[in-house]
Image (cartoon, rainbow, N blue to C red):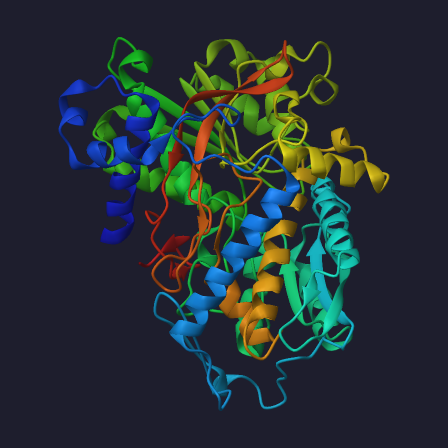
Length: 527
């Protein structure tokens, strides 16, 4: 399989950062390498409440709002300095070398379709039914965020228009065949101003259309790297930690513990359960790409089984993987399949025999690992690991005193939503805050809220995200850096405490992930 030089180079740099953050024992090559030195200066404490090196976060919502207002103005100033939308309306220019030719938009295209003097119409597709139905909680939480800022009069633009977001959700059941007509309905019948999609397969099937029609598609709800392509797909932007970066973190974790894991034959076996779609493929090919660069490449055996994302269970695949007797297991799955992987591992012996078991970052919070989910006293999930993509947890009692988390929990409760009902509500807060800030930045630009201004805002945002752990940035820079979130921390589930416990230091990889020109045929980035 051919890998691009830039992709492999990125993996090596990221691996060095991870090894330093995890506290590598491999003194020989880690001690003097440039990547290790770089890592030492870029990692910070992982304790969200008592970090000693991460910048202090505001202690009240009032302080947060003051900070965000200052940061929004700085983003506006950067966009204006870069040129913004030209006076003839033919070009949009932003920081980091971003230039978009608006003359290529359709003849009937409008900068303000979906806007009235009082309304911003935003469309959303996501699953509210089917195996991934828990992700519907993203929309519930985003609705709460929009309603709060609607009532606060937050969406007043530079033209003096005060609007409220009209958030229209369509249930696609995580099925691309349903996403496509729903997107058409949102664009052609609802005439939305901008659109959001959730999930890798639904988003990959529709994002070309948004570029062809110049429809803002900010902060796509997936970690697939294809959405970090500001040159070829400027109307879509990434948001969360890239799946390929997460795969590198897994690989570096295995490398760092190779001596611990290796058997008498000096070999380590890693097994994975892979969702048979573009989502799972991103994890799988990213992990394999990392292994090709590993210093232990010849001594790590990688085996995998796929499962259909519409299948009722993962039993057969997990039984096959258990027979492989792996040293490390990684679940490259989503939603309810995360819980199934945990319970199957407990039943087939992998929970006891495998040294390290990993759940993916896309199964956040406690929803998929808590005792109520896995059954019994919850010990089936005990000891599982995860790459936390640098985010807080609305259901972690250790974070209840965090002013933003406390505010979120209050807002959800006031709307009749129990925060404990789903950890995925936190993901809705995560994305909802980003949308609110991008809309406000766009509105503060010359000309007020327009589609081009929203596109520029989403490619230029540089703010302190309140849902990020201290030390994890939230910033992009045009074509030079297309990933807002590039960091994380390893965590391990405690069944006794029913919480994720941080392991090691926070890893801040800002600017390290390479933009992606995606090749659907290989599942790889060409550059």
